[in-house]
Length: 266
Image 1 (tube, one colour):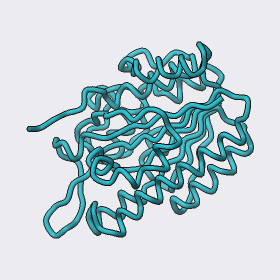
Image 2 (cartoon, rainbow, N blue to C red):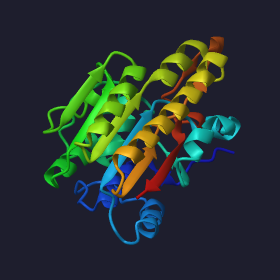
Image 3 (spheres, one colour):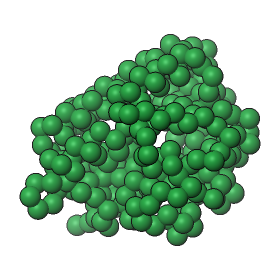
């Protein structure tokens, strides 16, 4: 039986905006009620002052189900783990465009593995309009920077995922931004070459989980006294193909079902 998650990746945009108390893009999908109500209880009716968005590429729900212990560093730093449905085609630029615009691919315009600058309103446009300072930290040339360029915000491009994480630690300590996004492509890169369940690929899940924990700890230290949210938000899943290699992009459970984590601190 083909089971699809009912929560949608397109809800992420309005959810982040709702957590921080500013208006999302007008046409964005509605916010995730479970996240907003959890935050309202934790923050006692107040809004979030700071948000860390950690985006590991290609982490599927089935990987969490089969290798749950590898996610313990994520679990102990969050309080909600929600099954989420990605979009088709389930490839990086399409999925991140939907995640941070709140729109389906036919509306935001990216419907293949291409990296044009989005012309629609996004979370980052709405954040800047509300007086927030976002920053995107990613590896050079990757989708998540390319498609969101030309906004009045900061972009930092690094050579490797580890450098992205180190730079994110610096940015957190400076405490100049309300929205800090860090992208890691290491699992996606590895699983394409060796398959999702190869030892070298599973080690990258460990790497992502540990990196997230390190960033959360740094954020909690730098953001003491602020209402803060920490998000672990993959874009799409993956599956094994002939030859033991990994792939994604199909309308199938393995590629479409992902899991999003949210944690809170004050």
